[in-house]
Structure formats: C-alpha cells, structure tokens
View 1: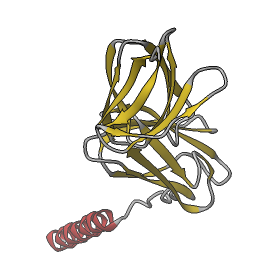
View 2: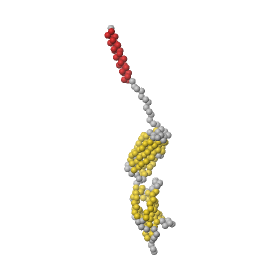
View 3: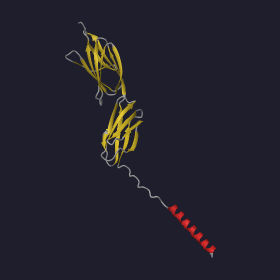
View 4: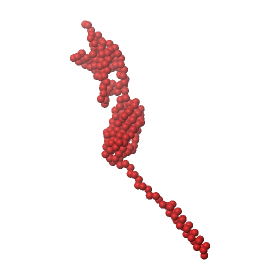
Length: 229
C-alpha cells in the first residue's frame, strides 16, 4: 500500500536525521597540545626596612627585562627570563629614605639560570644616622676626614675657628681630627660630649685625634694662647 510505504520512508528519514544530529552533538574537536611551561624560572626576594622604597632593574642575555618597585620586604615571581644558560643581572637603581645603604645580592647580582627554580635574594640595609656637631674655638683650624665602614668614599672638611658645624653622618663613622694651632696658640684639648679624649702631636705642629661616632655627639676642639712664661 502506497501510504504505508510513505510512512516507512518518513520514519527511516527521521531516524537518519536523529542519528546525524546525535553524532554532531557528541563530536569533540581535537585540542592542540598545550605549550609546556619554560624549563627555567626565577623567584625574587627583597628584604629591606619598611621605610625604604626601592626600584630593581633586571635584564637577561635573551633581551628580557623587568622593573620591580616597592617598599620594605617583598617577593616576586616566577619570572621567565629564558632557558638554562641565560644570564640575568639585577641592580638596585633607586632607593629613597635610606641615605646610607648596604646592598647584598645572593648568590650574586649576575646569575646563570639552571633548569627549574632559580632564586635571587636582595638584602638592603640602611645604616642609621647620628648628628655630629663640631665646635672649633678661635686660635686654630681643623681638617675633618670622615670614613664609614662599608663605604668606599670619604668626606673631608676644613674649618677655621671660631666656628660650629653640624652634620648627619652614618653611625659608626670614624672621624680623623687634624688640628693645627695658629701662631701664638696651642691645642688645649679635644672633647667629645664634654669628656677629654687622647690625641697625638706630630713633628709638623699638628695634632691628631680619632673619634668613632656611635651616638649623637658634640666634638669640641679648643685652642688657647701660648703662655708667655
């Protein structure tokens, strides 16, 4: 019968369509293989006082570079600068609220990356300051030579009395006082916070004293007229 054949054809067509739709719905598009992570990376740790603000510049032989800014102690990473064998350099390029810093890079400010994790630790210490007041009386002059442990630079100052000079210096600075009396005068003494300290006389008529500044100090260099008797 014609209508029965037509019904069966319709049923078969519906089944074919349903199977096609189901096949399309369960088809999974194959995904590309994920890109593996770099084989080397850097973890960066900065240790500094809370009041110190800093900027650190890092650059690598691959052309990679980065700036890290902050204050106090912070950690950064992982940073992907290149694969094993890449040389990375770290430098503290700016530092505020820390006029006399000491900076340590561990293991070094230049590292060669190995496979896996690489670590760079930068330690910033700020040397406390002390106030030093130098009081030079009339009758002579002084040369002050200031040096601080851990710093390659020195400061020098020439003062003719009477004069008072105050300055902020790193704690534990060493001050070499070279005093020379004017004609008709001699050195009466060198005093730190009112207490006399030892000094030596040179064959050239000058006097030398060494002072280590561990706290706020007033240093007096006093000259007096030579007795006519």
